Structure formats: C-alpha cells, structure tokens
Length: 348
Ligand code: DNO
Image 1 (cartoon, helix red, strand yellow):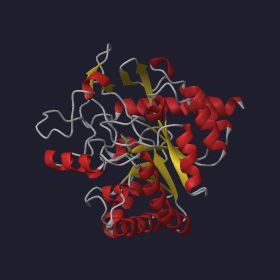
Image 2: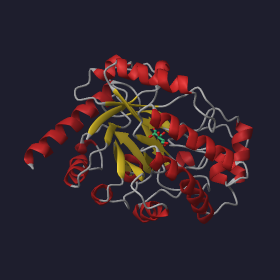
Image 3: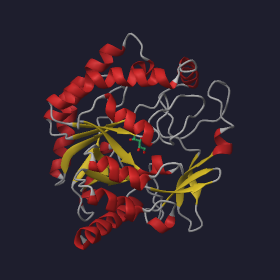
Image 4: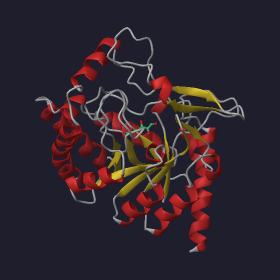
C-alpha cells in the first residue's frame, strides 16, 4: 500500500511539512480548488500543486476530486461540454504525474452529516448522522432554516431548492444511464493517459431527500464495474461510507474488488452504526463497528497495491479546523494503518 493524506492546498491549516513528518507517508491527495465545478484546471495551478507537494518530499499521484458537474448527472444537453472538460482535466493531471483520480456521482450533495462537532465521552468531537435530524430538513422548502454539513456552500438556498427539484422526477435507472454515458467517454481518456479512475461510494450509502443514490452496495458496485469493464474504471473503497449500513460486508467487498484489481484507492474510517444513524469514531477497530484489521488483511491478501489514506479524524487535543480533516487524529489513524500493515506483512 502507499500511504497518503488529504491536503486542501495552501488554505489548509495542516501543512505539508507536518504531513511529511508522519512516518511512512508517501503521497498527498489534493485538487485544484480555484476553478468552478466543470471548468478546466489551469496547467499552472496543477504544476504549482505538484511543486509544493514534491518540495515537501511527497508524491503528487492522487487527485481527490475532479468533481462532476450536475448537468452530467442530470443528463442535460450541456453535458458534452462538461465531459470534454473532464477529459481535459484527466489529461492534464495525468501528464503532471497523477495515477489515481477520485470522484463521486452523488446528486447535489456530497457526504452528508447532521452535526460536525458532536462531543464523544472522551471530550473529542466528531461527525455524526442522526436520522431524526435529517428528517427535519426539507431542501424543497426554501425557508427551511437548516442546512447540513457537506452541502456545497456555493449554492444559495434558492439554487439548492431548484437543483433538488430537478432531480425529483429522476429515477435511479436514469441516473445509471447518465453515469454510463459519462464513463463511456471518460474511461478511454483515463486509459490513454494511464490513470485510474476511482469512484467514491455515496456517503451515506442510501437515498436522502428523495435524491437517487446508486453507488451504495455490492450489487451496485458489481453493476458499476461492468459498465466499462477495464481496470482503469475502478473504485475508492470508502469503509465508512459503505460501513454505515449493516447490510454491507466491507471485508468481503475489500477482498473481492482487490482480487479483481479494481480498488485503486482506500479511505479507511471507522464508524459506530447506531439504530438511528452513525457516528464517526477513531480508527481503532474497538472504537467502532468495523473490523479494520480484517479489512486491511483482505486488501493485503488480495494483492492490493494502491493508495490508502486515513479518512476523517475526530478533533482531539484542542485542535480546531476543517471538520474531519485535522492533523492529529488522522496522523494517529495513519500510524495505526502502518502498524496493521506491517504486522500483516510480517505474518504472511
Ligand atoms: C469526504 C470525502 C468526500 C470525497 C468525495 C469524492 O470527506 O470523502 O468528500 O472526497 O466524495 O468525490
């Protein structure tokens, strides 16, 4: 495995220097953030990111994310222009050295939580999702006061209402069709430029506010991989996104898709599954519902050689910053993953 860490660019409170001091760190996971969704990233911005990452002694190999414009997900006439831009971005980051590109196909909302600073018994804070809180939010009511973390803050409330409304008549089948249309056009570019596309599962892995969500479980991942059945069309195995539903057997999926050579990137995160939702927890298996050792072993035993990053961390030791993306708890997570991997390697 190649250990990696997400970095949000110069604005990030966590510095590349700090990240480089985490033992075993290989790659930075990042993106160009100064361009609106759907537009082409400038070669200068990409080169500057690469320069900063390499100056810190790390590799510039993983992009998270190149976001997918809503018109592509909605299947609008303008999608061809956005798909052409997408292919151009694939080409540009690949030419700069990227080997893996993470993205998602979730309508409107990316990851969704109801609170980002829930206090755990040890005083650390974490991200949580409680169903009763979600049920109070109606994005179709523009005077609804609530917003949820994870929502794209660049939408005004009115715009959000509008875009959610456009999905009201969309079936899951239609979203599958639009995804297929997209893949048929971008995967050839990924093959040509020798880079792996790694779709991120929907987080959480169920429909919210009536918006269709399709990258949610083993059946759907099987279907996804068959849409364009080449290695470059792969997945980001996000243990927390899949693992927040008890129906998903994450260990089995890790083994299966690693053996197929279709996992290019792994987000390792532990969650505690509750009757009314879930809480993100420290990485250690005993802190949540997932068997992190078994997942790492399944990856190892099935020849996984891609990138792994500790996913969200709690806020600990008084740290403040971007929820889920502080330094300390993610660094603890990275060290734990190193320990698991070394033990598994030496034992086999
Ligand atoms: C949340 C992340 C996601 C992920 C995207 C990939 O913290 O895991 O936002 O980056 O879904 O496109």
